Length: 61
View 1: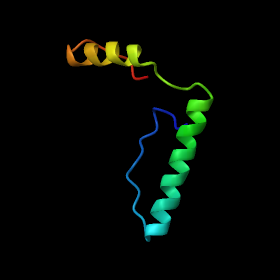
View 2: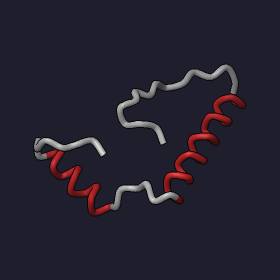
View 3: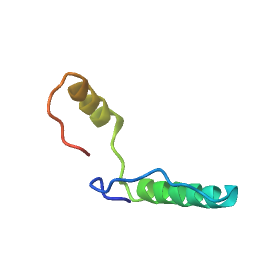
View 4: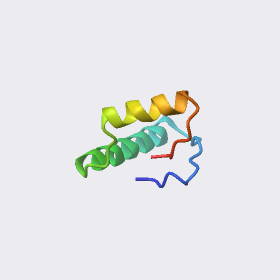
């Protein structure tokens, strides 16, 4: 999983195949994160979003 501090840029691809390979890698990364339990429960996310919208200081998960 990428570090939250890392700024990710939108990649530019030379071909459709390169884009699809990149997408497959991101999906595999997400599936590995989910399998390892690196997720944010819905109720936690709801509270975080409510605080963000209310202008309260929030930490980046």
